[in-house]
Every structure is written in C-alpha cells, then in structure tokens.
Image 1 (tube, one colour):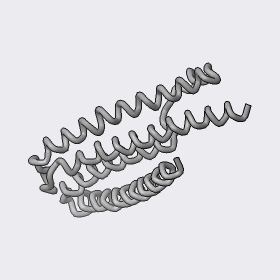
Image 2: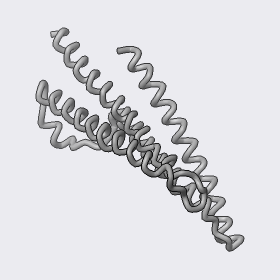
Image 3: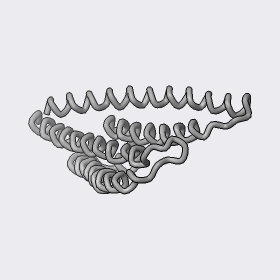
Image 4: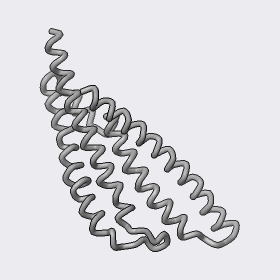
Length: 165
C-alpha cells in the first residue's frame, strides 16, 4: 500500500509541476498573441493553436490532479445524509463509477481517437492531432489509478476504524 501512495505522490507532484508550466507557457503565448495582434496588427495563428491545445492539456491534467486529491465535485448535501457503512458504500460506489468512466471513455476511447487522428495534422502547427488527443488516455489512466487508490484507502480506513472498536 505504501508503494501505491509513493507512486500517487510522485504523479501528483509531476502533474502539479506540469500544470504550472503549461499555465506559465499559456501566459507567455497569450501575451505574445496580444502583442502581435494589437501592436503589429498581424495575428498569429500558431499562438492561437498553441493556446487552445495547451489549455486542453492543462484542463485534463488538472482534472486528474483534482481526482487524486479527492476534491472533485460531489453532492455533499446528499452524501451528508449517510453515515457508517452506507456512507462508505456511497463513497466507494462513486469512486468505482469514476474509475469505470475514466477507463472506458477516457482511456479506451482516448486511445482509439488518438490512433484515429495520428494521420490528421493541425492547421498551423502541422503536428499529428493524435499528439493533442494523447492527453485524454493519459489523464484517464491517472484518474483510474487515483480512484483505485482512493477506493483502497476508503476500505482500509473502514477496516482500521472497525479494529479500533
């Protein structure tokens, strides 16, 4: 279990650093785009694409990061009505549904769309669209891993509470 937590900690740090770098990159590119558009009156299509794809990558990586911290959106008003085993069952079910969605839609679907779009190139950057879509299965794998660890933590926490009684 400790090995899983170490891996999770490393993934969380890497994702956090990468997200900060992407945000800084977007700030620089956005500033460049504003200058070229309004000062030189020559808009840059490359910067437009870079901003769009960087934002997509950042949003999906931050989503995975948030799932790793278990800070994702929940209906707390509903969850607060439960206690004990019912609350544990609700939390585990929620994590399992997130895991299933990430595995099926983000990982499987993301791999399929990435393979499908490797022959298409972006308009300005001329790179395969598959590189842009690669973040979908990547963030999906992270969410699957984080949800799995979260489920283990929930179940382990419940066992520890029962042993203390």
